[in-house]
Image (cartoon, rainbow, N blue to C red):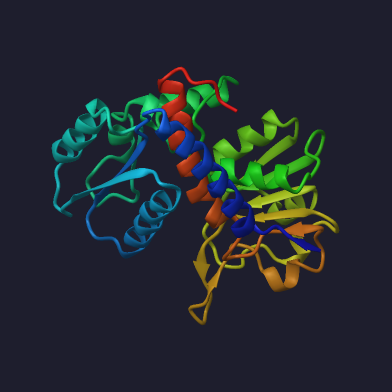
Length: 285
């Protein structure tokens, strides 16, 4: 079994971004990420701090737009529209979840697609699903980059994605399909889930249930990607996969923490730089 060390790969990606960004800034480029945070959700506060810190590390401008918990739809919409028009902002994200009563879907679709660096707008999703160049949701993109870094063969492989969220499961399935995998998406209504999972050469799990995938659900030699970020019965950070039980059966596995998580932030920074290049007609590497 080999660990897929997302923390190491993400550090290398950030170093590359820092170098590219310095070159662009020397030519007068102004690349900036805006994060809109509505309310005071503790987990969101941590995630936002990590994103702002990552921007600082690579020399990218960042802006945190804080809105109170009781903000109306129009309050958030106004903040989004202002950032759409701001030339100093290359990309933006609306930190989820939002307080009750605010429509995530409607607000996200107000984001200019060219600045949608988390690939959440219907335009960017449509571009992904129709095989066009797109800004892709950061976590699924990070998974693909990990598989590529470790030179794990994908073409012709059976890939099973457990979880069908718009942010992870669905875009990840499409990215795997684009890599010529044969993809199955499983969810809460899937019959014989364990049997389906056992057929996977590449098993990706993103359901938010601590240690849900056990050794009997994993084929010998499979590649296991754990996107979960949960707490076990002792309050310890863990993933959706029972790492201790599964790691003896698989060929590669992502740990939690230190696996997919660091890649999500790295991809957000990279997408922000990519968005700047696309907006300014700069050829991508």
